[in-house]
Length: 112
Length: 111
Image (cartoon, rainbow over all chains, first blue to last red; front, top):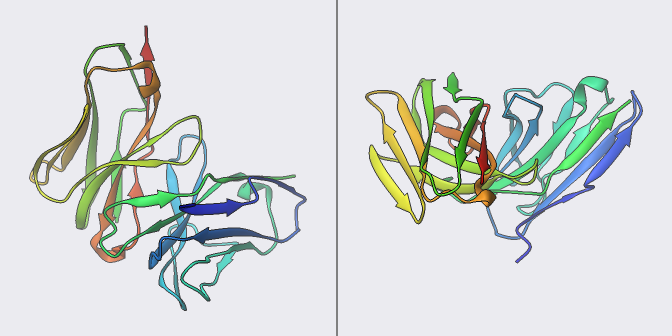
């Protein structure tokens, strides 16, 4: 059972480039979320989804897009990378009661 | 909105007991969770309190008091491998499928 899989694990982008962070889960969870983690800031919610075809903004959505075409996949798109988006990104999924979230291993993104 | 406060760092020795506190200001939530994170790896779930009181899972216990807007994680018989960051998080009423995290507490366990 793979759980939540994120790719890539590491990425370096130049300012202005775009890219997609991939997230897939095999637990048939309806709820999926993207968080970013910066030193001393904890995890902050970027976007989330309560099911296929439904997404919404979290605390820090600017500069990011998401889509949820299937239950399994929840990609995060950086439209035009900025140095302020240098961070560690975590994808998470949870079941209907959301009492336990499962996290991917993270993507370490550096924007230069 | 939601705001959760935790100490930034706690130190303890092997075999001891340590308590990590979490105080919060929130417009309403379903429950309080705790997550452990080693060296920037994936956060992993430790416990969830939907109701006031103590929840025990092995060496770890978690407590919630809604009237005091307060919770804590209690770690007993500390081991070196317990050195990690610990986050409290709430599942808000306004975003039931998400979590709002505190900034985390780094626990350093020494021999």
